[in-house]
Length: 256
Image (cartoon, rainbow, N blue to C red; front, top):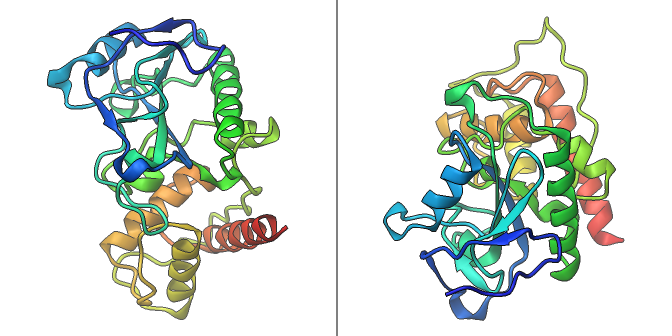
């Protein structure tokens, strides 16, 4: 059955089969951005609307910036999968999901066109305004599912979003070629500090002081979003400094 679009920015409604009530009456407080990983928006919309896909989302945005809604915002779409953010594991109940058309890393990973980015910003601002979402509640799929997902990836311009008033961002610290950083298996107080900051921001990591496999995945997710110039899962000074500034800036903003 069809439904009325939640945003005036929507060009078409294409109802998806996989949807259900949000658990325990939860209201959405997170906005999760994905890429489709498919060759066209039409194919993505078709697949995301089918019951046999086992997935769905609230919105798909094509390369020209056209927006299709698949699931009403009041309902739970199946877009995040096994995920975590700030103690929550049912991210689907807590979020609205936008799929951005891009074939992804396995098929060339082209740049995101300006018209598409403008549409992401416009829809994102509309959603976050209507649901009173915090700036740091606009996240990548990779943020909530490190290691399992890498979308929308390092080419997605979070800085462009933040400058337009959507999401949260700090300028990344300069990457030094002569600083390879700490890697998997290393033990260091700097690792424990970084793990503490990552956990404080929302990632699922414990401050053990050891850069284990999970920490490597979480560092990679952080870099994909906030320090995309070099994404390697290592803790160099640039990553550490960027992380520290991000957490402090988020704390100041939330305390204001």
